[in-house]
Image (cartoon, rainbow, N blue to C red):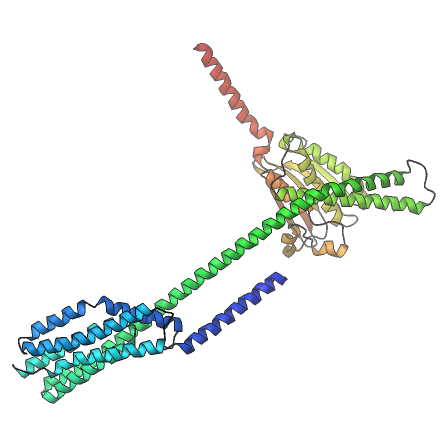
Length: 510
């Protein structure tokens, strides 16, 4: 497993660590400043949820109080019920006013602890107003009134627990006065039923407070999930923005590179042609013999170096044109065998100088191919040059041109050189990539030969494969598709010719 140790990768890692540390510090600071022990930003959301829920019941609660008063009027005088209802409405109004003031103030003037304390105080007032039900005078059977008081208590505690679930301390402040008051009155009234009702009242209070806390935790979980989603959306937007910026920079760099290559190609080739031409004249002694043999050798070296530099410039320009989509194929019917034979003759002397046996296995019966002769010639030369470059002395190279599966045509170059490690194949096929063998032997080249072959094959709709194993050699295969083989196109043309003859006969008959 490889680890990217480039400066950009290290910078990205440091940036991610800095963001995570900053986020951890921010979370810790928010927990320390929170009134609920979670996140300070959650406090406002929870209190706003509480205020919104309370305000949503501003008409429902008065209706409930009026309904309870009318039903209880059978046992209690109406004047007392009206007084009780008025007291409850005062507490309800206090809650509504505090909630409206909180929402109107907004988050800019928000203080979590102070606002929570305000809500707890008004809930105590509201709870005490509900608890006054225990002091209603009894005019009928005491047992019936006790049951009614107990039932009203449960209704009030349940309704308030649901409405104030976002702030558990408010739920507790609202329910405790009623439970203590009604429970105490039931205990003082005596009888086992009243005792049981008092115990049930306490149990109901505990249950509804537990329910409120459970709903509060669920609300916090929901806020956490929403915060994580918002953070993920923010990070995705930030990553997209960085990606767009990187893409724009890459496009600008690519444009600058293309402009540079277009501008410098003429400036570089003109002096190189002069250097190559004059050095060839000097090394060939066209204008007369050179007395000092070292000068002749130097001229030959200058010629070889200039030729190498010109080839490198041509490869750079070809790769640039291909990547920019400006490499146009000049397609025609060509013979793959003839091109391969020309390339073999061009490089045979070089192979022989290294003591390498270059074996040609050409299928002379191959039909013609539809493609760019110059580009395909470059494919053959690049593959053969690479094989000769890395095959040791007394080695063997098999240069093969044959028909492949499904009537396609293929160029294969196989050598018995040292091979390429599997981990380096991707590097070798990348632009400017060189394997460890090329670096050790200091072979000349910029690592552009195979990438250019790959791109030329892509332009022809073909494929390029490289198979290698250490100490067993390397084989490269360039495969042209069946659609470019002229023989494969012949049946289509024959059918078209038959159709034209049929149409002309039909017209003559008509």
